[in-house]
Length: 239
Length: 239
DNA sequence: CCGTGCCTCGCCATTTCTGGGGAGTGGAAA
DNA sequence: TTTCCACTCCCCAGAAATGGCGAGGCACGG
Image (tube, rainbow over all chains, first blue to last red; front, side):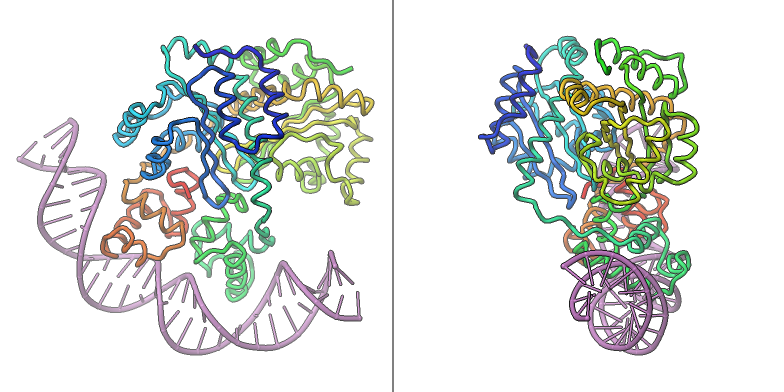
């Protein structure tokens, strides 16, 4: 049965592990400390790149990636629009694809109980920390009622650790957009065409094009739509 | 002196206050429970609209708004780019405008010690929860070391309460996109043009256009770029 | 049974965007 | 002081997207 005996010790452990540079190992230790089936940490980069770290079986992780399950996984999609932690039972499993996905997951060793905590950072960074288990509904509800807030803290500390480790290999930070570029991108994202945006900003359409192109260049985007998508996912513009 | 004697009771109090519909009152009670000078809750809507709730004096709040201090307040600006809670001492106070602002704040009853916790939600929502006090540096550091994690939880619960109260507006739920529409939108958001997307999905370019237009219609978008922006901000596609 | 939604395909004309050039100002940092 | 960056303006031609017209088949539920 799930337990959580010593929060202080767990958090200290998460803070202190300096030798371990591998998130998977930290996740495994955390899972053992909690006495639950699995710990999953899912990370969506500002570039849209996905990074996962789970104690699931390699077979399931490979299957998940191969089938691009992150595009239909209700846990990911649901939490991406949510503010607060959420129990898997309260997710929307009505879609057929979602139920197929769930059956597939259960068949590959995923527990039927889960509690997922969304974590967000600047520039549209998004992470999802999940505790997974298999037990009676009532037992799980009791566990969450008692330790849900502890899991929030654990998620924060785990995420902090992940950022520490990940900071070493992602030093490059995209140049931020200039104010006018932000204006231009924002208005384009609101659906206005170039003529309207230029009029709105009280500049010539040619000048506007310079902004769009320089923003596109900074964002490494192939076209305007791509630039908008990147600017949004990096949190450079808010629509 | 700052104290935090009974976290459970405080969190329960935050959860349970059903009668109080006024955040300011909740903030005042929370401040009293913590025994510190002030509680500040700052909210930035996805539309960029600002909303604040503080136990500061009315004079200071009015002054803050009148002078648009939120544009130069290093606490706001710094936390907006940060992932983790941060002590005011570690902010960047080097800019002259920032120091002037600080002097002005201290002169209006703001404590010199502070601990600010950024909270983020979907669609670029951003909130900042701050505990403010005035005391010796060492005392404050000790308080944060001991209760920093408690403040994280309190911030979360307070934010949840604020969302409950502010949840008057109906989030119009748009019809979800069909699988093919999601495919099309996703690939467009990745920067491919219509010919490439059509080839990628192994359909004719005209069929692709039907998807794009029906997605645009469902999303109430004016053009493709707008549709991508809306699909992203509603979490219908993940890029 | 019939409507509704989803998936697939085609043509035409017009508007809009993109990719190359160029030039000049001012401010801030190095 | 020089160098960089942000901001502003201009032309041209080709590529791409858009708007509007049409068609049929398949699956699901009232």
